Structures are given as C-alpha cells and as structure tokens.
Image (cartoon, rainbow, N blue to C red; front, top):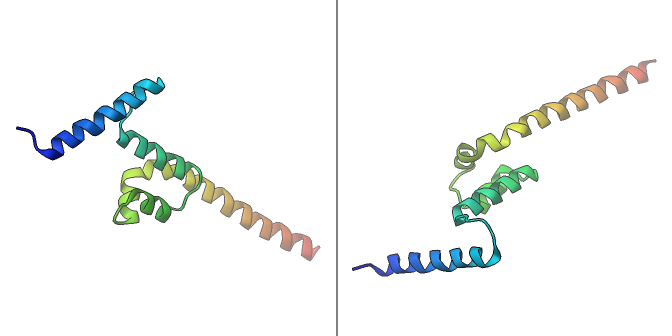
Length: 98
C-alpha cells in the first residue's frame, strides 16, 4: 500500500508532466528548472548570497560548491575590471604629471 506522500508525488508529477505535454515543452523536471533559474541568476550577475537565498541553501559556500563552474567567467570579469581600474589610475596620474 502506498503512503499519502507517494500518492502526492505521483499526482504532482502527473500534473506537471501533463502541463509540459500540453504546452509542447520538452520533458524537464522541477530540479532542472531550479538549476536553470540558478544559472540565469548567476549569468545576470546576481550576488552569491542572493542566489543562496533564492535556492534556500544553508550557506553561500554550499551554493558555490554546487554552482562553482557557473562563476568561472565572473573571475575573468573581475580581473578585467581590476585591470581597467588600475590602468585608469595610471593613465590619470601620467596625464596629471605631464
């Protein structure tokens, strides 16, 4: 005999699957959608703490452990911005001294 939780899961799965089928959407799971939402948030430049709260993770470290590869490009962007800031300072001082 199935428990109420099993029946609830089946019911939830069936309405979700039926909605996807009715919409002509590809088969995805709620977890797939969760990962997609996190990916879009990271891609949009969301703060790690904001993504952590959005996903309900207990810590930002957990979010980074799960989604670290999504933040790889951010490291390059930070390096580029630091380079631009330092270059602007050097150029500004050079022009001021001329």
